Amino acid sequence: MPTRPSSIASSNWYANHPDYLERPGAAAEQYLHYIVEQLSARSMPLELALLPVVESAFEPYAYSRARASGLWQFIPGTGSLYGLKQDWWYDGRRDVAASTARRARLPAALHDDLDGLAAAIGGLQLRRRQCAAGP
Image (cartoon, rainbow, N blue to C red; front, side):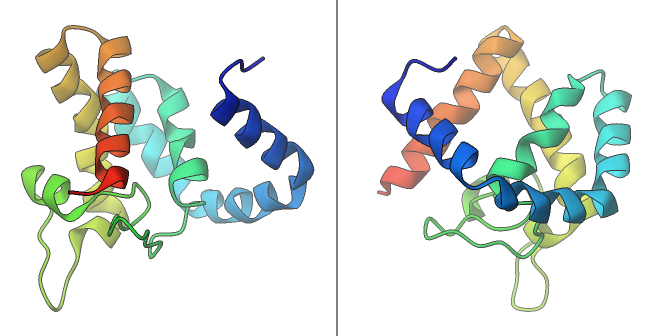
């Protein structure tokens, strides 16, 4: 059971809106097999395949006020850092195959940098908070 106020609030919201999970569930059918394949190939925990439920509701064109975009909600700088092309005609953050391949590498890259998967996932959360806070 969550103990942090923000986690409790999120848990309560999902508990009070069970219909919300139907939408990403239907959308996940299109992408979940590919995501699991990519994570398996990199020996990453398969639980990471469910992150898009929270990140984007499995909507490849999701866009946040922090300018994060796509299934995995890459911000422009992180997308560029991991080789996702972004120009007037194409945004790799919204390309399910390209962004999933990069996202599957992200925890491994952080693992190498931060010495451990738990630290890597914590680092992802820290980066998300820093991006949400803005410049």
